[in-house]
Image (cartoon, rainbow, N blue to C red; front, side):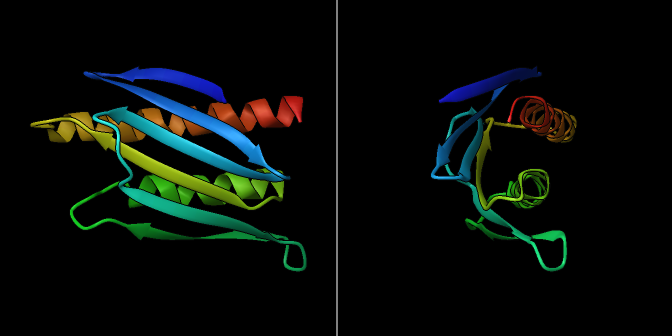
Length: 119
């Protein structure tokens, strides 16, 4: 599995990916790892756009990260992308949440740049 890692305060955020045929399975995890949300991004060749859908577990807040990441990755690759996210820190603060979201976006953008340059 391929990996990109960044630090966000107390959490090490890790993005891992692998191919399933021509499609992508991507995970984003940190702190106490789990599955908090899963999204699927699909590229529509006829319309030239990507859409995504997400399922979030009750009480979890990773849906925004997963939804946008699945759409962005499928838009870049024109492949179906499953994106799972699970990041947990005990007693997390609002500032830490904002930093994790920021770092998550940076990691996803680094992954997309890697794909554009290497695939």
